[in-house]
Image (tube, rainbow, N blue to C red; front, side, top):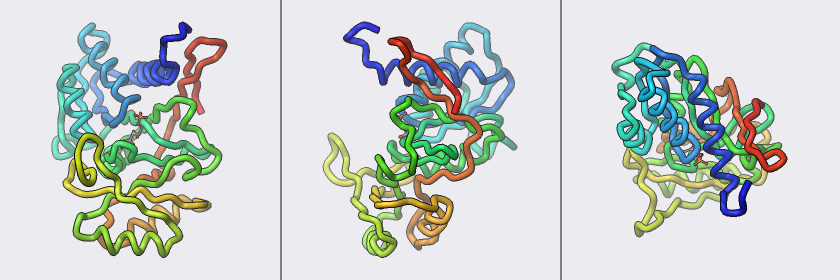
Length: 236
Ligand code: 5RP
């Protein structure tokens, strides 16, 4: 690989394409959010255009996914329009050996969990930098909160041993506002030893919409890596 090529970008692209290759004609596809899934959405569009893939419908997990799907010619439907989702493709911020995830780097985890969780088959697409032995070791846990409840939820998360920080906008003064009009607390925990329990405990705090722990939802993790200078995709 030449020096100018960004290896992370190449890994994301290859893994996104590999996931989109697995989608079959006539299916309903959950469209995830983030830079890796963007490559999958683009490749789904390419396959539709070439005639290799026919008659798919996309269920977007965010404004970003919906914009990309329209750009690449993927017909969109809502959860009111379909009985089931055949396959969902989405990225992650951390993946542990049990295929549990932290998501929400793009503040879309609430909608992502609804769509990814409804899919018969959920494919996670990551580059190898996202693999961790334990969740929470590299990435704080995103928690979507109703704006009026930010102060009490912050205190409740501190009582659980977390260090919450309100996510602030980039090129926008003030906090990040989610697609649903809420705010995000990024919570650092020194140890997430029981992700399933922590997911439920946090979601039980009044004012919390959902948190970025995805436990027991993943069917397949596709990992993009560079081996001997070449991008390869492997399964976890
Ligand atoms: C958005 C997400 C993304 O899927 C996650 O942040 C990974 O993004 P990327 O593929 O850009 O690294 O959870 O809420």
